[in-house]
Image 1 (tube, rainbow, N blue to C red):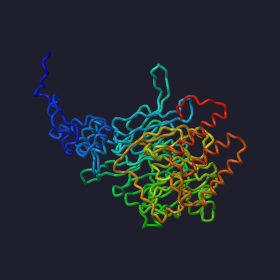
Image 2: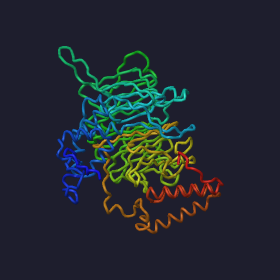
Image 3: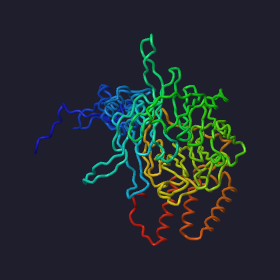
Image 4: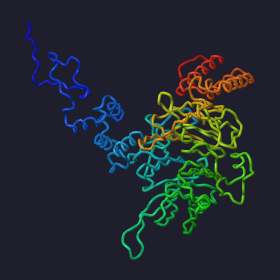
Length: 580
């Protein structure tokens, strides 16, 4: 018989359970297992150092296991080490209540994704990630390239270029190389039209140190607007303002020869100046006049929080959630309001107040339609609806804000030339992209014929996507998670919920049975009016998007209808495609 093995007195077993939960069941030391040592006996600095080597996703998951690890994983020391590992060149942690955690998550979640509408490959791709970038705050695609502004005020120039693939082939890739365009940037803008062909120049609002006047020492920080060529990144023009004026946002409106720059001050006032873009590349110096915009002159009590613009109109949102409009052409005014009764061609800067039931948080402005999101997460659309870009289920124009009742609490909203996009959160906390309007050119992936209601697009959305936009050739999504600046919606008061269908089964029937029955009758009549089976299938898909169902239920019905449609066309089910 062999001798019995004796456990070494130096062997110790580390207890992995929560120290505050007490001893393990059957606390007597089992034979041959060694002594238990609580992880709480380790120095906190050592535990934080070990945890800092975990991926960010694992650190968050570990912090949800027990109270002890929640406190350890939430310590700023852990996030400081993680942040320096993710961004070694980041010298300062930034601002906020939790600066190191915020900085680490910003840099972990940053990314720019795009999907081309044409070509064989219709999958989501990721652009090059600048190592110097401290998170992504804003982005703007131009004719040839993409510009990204980070949280440290650095503006990056992401270039399209010819690169060599792994097979030795030369390929044209989007946003595959980057350079730093400038630092100290606050905001930037370009031609507000949806077609990037018109975006020749990039206007950058920045802060620069200016030498002091004669007889004084030191320098002063002054705001300025610098104009760059989007094709090469060369600066062609610069205008500097008085040091007493501080701006936070810039938008453009108007034609190239009469380009109006609207500047929003920290106090909520709007100033404007006019430049001629066709003369910016000429080496000369001239003076432009900075004037107070009429919305700030006529309504001095208003404090504007943000602006949005297109070529022919401007929208202002105040700090109290009010909305004011400037419309500069009669055609766009008619599309937006359905009449020319109050349009004054001699006073195009006169602000028009929109009547809304609640405070507006953010908006999206297209060519001749717009979208508004209020504090309760409700979406209101207004304007031209020729292609169904308002998502109301029909193609009737709306001269006043109309609620899209089956959509709530969006993450982002975007309005283009004749289609609209909504970034929302699914029932399983994943992100999904919905779209409506014209589907020509692949701008609504999976819906080539378009849709008069918001339908789920065949696009894989990044988990931390926060904003989006589309051009004629490509769809862009920006990924970034800021733990201190997330939209918080209020719950709708009970007095306003009556008659408003919620996205759940049977909600409409329980609150308004008569209206739900009439809607179903209308749906059946629309299906019956379709001449062919394929048209009836497409109409049924649209109706599923209109109905107040949960996201998983809509996906089920859409997938089932696709299977029936393929079977009716004589096409076997086959393996799922990448788009599906």
